Image (cartoon, rainbow over all chains, first blue to last red):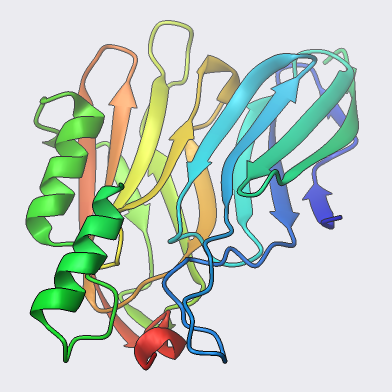
Length: 108
Length: 149
């Protein structure tokens, strides 16, 4: 089970632009490196990332081998209403991870 | 069979001395950008690709891409893509945004195989494409362990 860290404010005013930083532990093996036994290590990367705000996708990413190990992605979204932000990562050999964060939005 | 496998096989046969994975070429980057834009030529401007000019460690290079856009319902950024010229694979990432992003700015960390030119291309909601290219120098390359099989 991968370990993921998400940094975002727990409270925001309506209409405020909030920054979300998501980090997940993953080797992002490129498939180009050679292991100790002289064989090429099989590719094992995270292919996609998505953030859904109350079910609606607000941000998505398609990742390739050139993304560093332990992928870090920072982006912004507008706080529209209180609810849950769901973060999903999907990758090779059936890798899937989901994190949920709550956001409380107050009237400005 | 994937293009990458073909390239790797071809490089292995023709250049036995070359043990590194085949690197992408400027032409491949141009082709990849062409695929992303659907044939349109990206204009220069609006996009800001923020990356250090001199990179000590190519394994994790922080990059920030921001696009000058109001991010309103009728004028926003739909996607931002990063391309490299000489990594084994030219595509780095494609980010999908929308009017709910509020601000078109993305940060991440990437790998760089060698000193090269990078391009960031943004697709706007009006169908136009904007780009920014930067040249960087990489001191310690990513994937050096993979050199000697």
